[in-house]
Length: 380
Image (cartoon, rainbow, N blue to C red; front, side, top):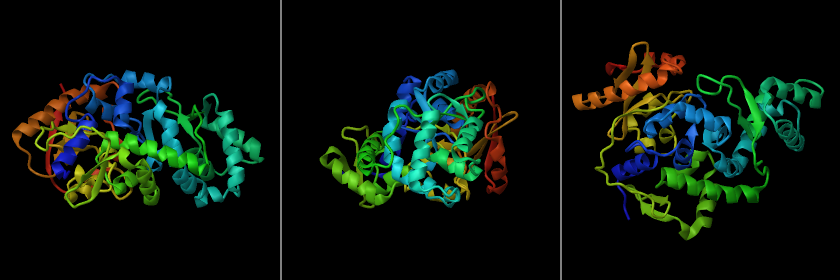
């Protein structure tokens, strides 16, 4: 079966709850969308606001608080929010990538620890973090074990490698100070067999939430070597459906997954910074027109909050004192601006109790954007 570019776009939107806002609970929605990038603590909240009708951020606060949803270093070696039941499999799948990138990093090697010593230290750290520990407490424990403080950059690499969950610490978006607790159940580390089986699980979950997708897409989503992805896909064999992309690329999918028609209406959206759909594919043209990709994804990797029109990125937005400032990269019809204004009317009060000018620290990027059609969309 051949699938068009617009059908791929609509499949992504449908599975990511972006064609219509869903009535799912926060925890069920997290299972459904698989993972939300969370290096900026506000982003999972704004992402769920886009996906759930009547979303109350206190529900996500509570889910983080009792570890039904967890924030941890996972895919692409970045912070993600995932359902707690997914964490172990995802972390085991990511083990070779995280081990090589964190423990193999020159900043960690400068500590003088061997891999074997690092493994022992990691196990001890996880035992120590069986209850929530602040960053300072972890550093003090390490200094006691090593006889001297661990260099800050080495500690950064170690904590990004160790399967630690970030502990929520209060408003405005639940994570104010750095504190950690050991993941439970604890993932198996440094075991290739376990990791390869877990990668099959991650692929199944990815395809359910982001498919259809190619081997390259899967590898980019997770930042896993393509040879590992190919081996895992081959091991899954006939369990996966296969489609053909517009360029003949083989696209894999979860059997029976939803494939809406390409002309299915897609409402305008004001998407979170680093929203997962902008990062989940090797071919980001599925949701970002090629001419806009360098505008949205900055040189240092920042991915700006985007305006989505008809399922594709059409501009960017930022919260300002008087509402939402939206900049379109192309002229938009009045009906689209009306739809975006309605979104802003809901987003402004959503942000008001937490961080009215969310993402303000990234406003410097607007100085580097080309001129566009800019409008202030006021709140209620």
